[in-house]
Image (cartoon, rainbow, N blue to C red; front, side, top):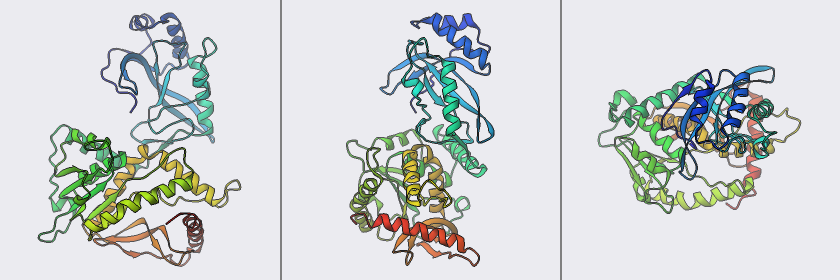
Length: 426
């Protein structure tokens, strides 16, 4: 996150002007700032003002006034209240505020041209900020205008919200060092362990998704041992992987040695290569080269392991759309998912944990996973309902009678993906 709240100094529930003025003692243009905020309070009385410590990208910190509340807007005929937080710099109103979405536990951030994965808001109004014509009220007006074009938040399903709450509860416990989980408990995992077997899982990749997968797998009590294999160069344990050190995870190891995959029942790949300056085809080729380096070594040391790749899914296409081809939709959706991977890491991590559970415990449960589908416009990987067990995909559930329309869409997807494959150097 770009900001960290270290301590709440004062909360001005009803915008007491004199209290605010006192707290702004170090602000260069205090009177101008107070006047601007008075207008905000008159228009949006629901906002809560406070003085907190803001941490900038370079690690420097400063005590800044900020306020949290909702702005009303309409999207496709429905009314929404969008939660936001604005941080007022000490050079206000000659410098624009720092603006963020403030989603609740049941909301997800829709990454777009005006919002990044951390919820930071970017608008032309902020880029062109100039006192005295620029004001916070004017900023809100443009924010509403842009958000009515592209909704910045979406509602998590009740299932996703419950799963994330369960994971957060687990993280809270282990952070406090009071976890009472028994990862060897067959009653918790529903597992059926053979004598002498060890339920070891290795997660490759020390980024946000890798960490989310490790925590989700640990929360479900799936494995006797979880290894985070961080192959990033330049650090002793990898940048993101070091975040795991704050948790008191039982039977967890961080390694940079590829040989640690040996004995793993499941090896989860979360690594990928992506750059916003690359074309989609270049992104695909970069990932081909990345996996060409890693997969042979994993196959050598983990000969009996099931490989599980956390990748972007085949999206649900809208063939009725008159303005974009199926391939355009594929490219745009894939890039959106890649750009938003930090935001979606927890949901993907929880899904990976479910798949891993079915494999490790041989549940023979049906999941929608991407698997090799032969004979569909060439050999391609498609997301299809499959039965998962200890050896991975045991059986693919074929299209049932009466689902010919779905089969046609699947065939179209296969054709598109095959066309992309033909352009790669495999």
